[in-house]
Amino acid sequence: MPIVLLPVGSDDTALDACLAALDAATPAGTRVWLVDDAQAGPRGLSIIERWLRHTPLAADYSRRQRHAGEVAHLDEALQACGDADVVVLAADAVPAPGWLAQLAACLARDAAIATATPWCNAGETAAWPRCGEVALVPEDLPRLAQACAAMPPRHAELPAAVAHAVALRGSARRRAGGLDGASYGSWYAALVDLSLRLSGLGWRNALCETAFVARGGEGTPGDGDLDALAARWPGWHARLANFLMDDPLRDIRRQLQQRHDAIDAAHPQADLFPRVAPGAAADDGTQAP
Image (cartoon, rainbow, N blue to C red):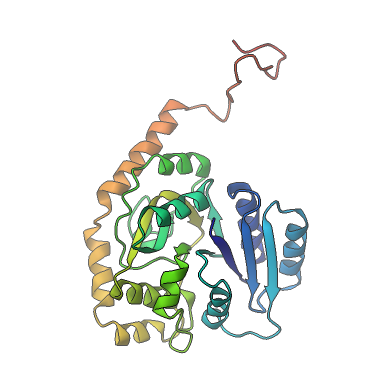
């Protein structure tokens, strides 16, 4: 499994929800590293300390004494991971069951994939159910994860990875030179820049259509980041706009919607009437056939 790298933010409520979802959706023993660029306040620190005591994951936490900047801090953590594959998870993300195994499988299927991005309700080019739009966090993440897992793993090309969650192939990241903290202030922009450099070296930025990670809102660029991207990559904004307008993932998105709807139709009252295994005792003491 890749290492899960979670840059800690200042939103304590979102962090609490993210850590709870991480526990529920990720295999026990998975390596998780919470990196804190002096962002967590007293309540956030309390949440992290409590989580570290009880999580089934192999978790570590580090905190800088002084703020270094989002990109510089994250690049330092990525460099510390060496050639290991890493999944960077936003601190306000809510991963669905099976998310990490699906991202790892995506990297394993094609050695040319350098970044793998799962679906997200606020995932811009990887958004579901509508491209480029922010939807509410799905209430049925386990069913949605089931629908994603049943999708054919085609791993279509994205213009760039998206910041809600991204699997990074360690060897490709190191070859591309890591993140450019001197030019960009936000992980959002630095990830776009890294993706474009990887693409220029012949690597792929792929959609992992078999995984879903929810988020309350989209990532945002820092001051001056969009201008810096336009200066280094003059065709980037037009390429992104064309992708959003043309929506080449339309058919894949429709397939996921159909699979999701089929699961709902097959189990319309699953929450009210949980299935009982044959021979097991039901709540009323009777035996299932």
